[in-house]
Image (cartoon, rainbow, N blue to C red):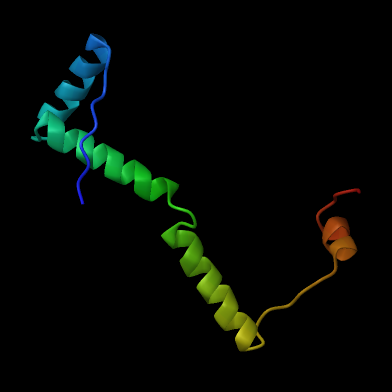
Length: 82
């Protein structure tokens, strides 16, 4: 479902965006949609990269391949004082 939104931009910002759109051989509308979609993917919570990392950790946990240590050992090993 597409939703229409009106945005107000300073003329210098608009010129920069138009210039980049032309450089990428896109219309300004297409370029703005692309930028917004890419940014929304970057902000996705949790990100796909994070989900993949956690899925890997869960598999390793199920297979007994993860080692856990208590917080004090972790702090000492990393030179952190509490």
